[in-house]
Image 1: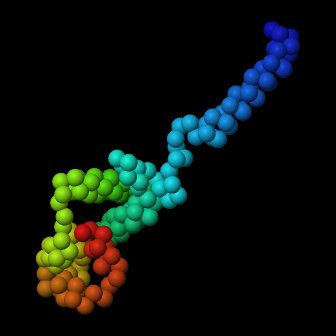
Image 2: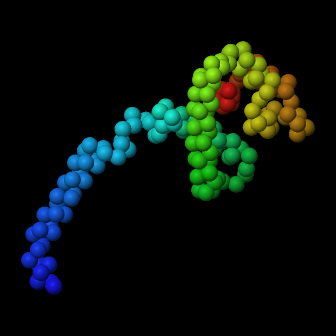
Image 3: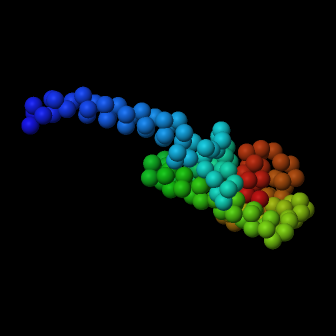
Length: 162
């Protein structure tokens, strides 16, 4: 049996080399699977709309910061994976919501966004100690903050939410 294998080594090597060349041409060169057809900075697509890395990372950082503020312990790798999944879900949901709003012809006026931001802050801002009095959310402190707009990071977080 070993003698037969030695005699056929040339053919085995030839078939292996051809298979490797075919892999390089069809999979890597022609991108038959379509995996690398995404643009620069694109990490996926939802219903034909590209999802950009920056968009995902902004959502991820926002969620990561919220979790970090709400707990004293360091974030575990398992919890970090949950945050990554939640960020992706959030990006996908936002894209689908925007598409549905466009499909139905629903537009939100800038004044409506300002009113929502002024009188209905997101849950993570409601829990921020800077906007609480005696453990309860203080709308006046929040509105004073909006009037002075000193903390750019918090304003960016608010902008992301709305």
